[in-house]
Length: 80
Image (cartoon, rainbow, N blue to C red):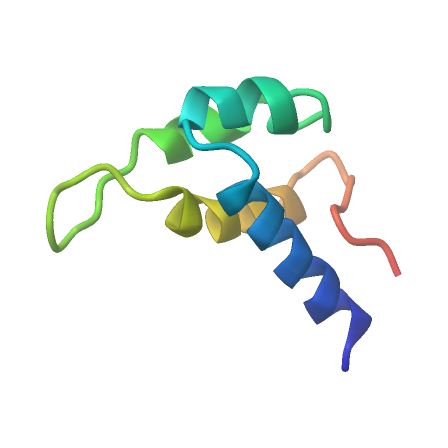
């Protein structure tokens, strides 16, 4: 199994399951990990296009990881 895929799976699970509230996710997981608020706040405000409900933590996790991988400052979430 590709280690990068496994790392991403573990990160998704951590983001989606370690905390039960999005603001707690930010305070206890994302901010201490160095994820800028300007990266995750817009994601937190997204809504599911089918239901117009706020997206879930499980939907948020891959979006945050994708955004981290695309950062223009050159920092990568997963270095090989």
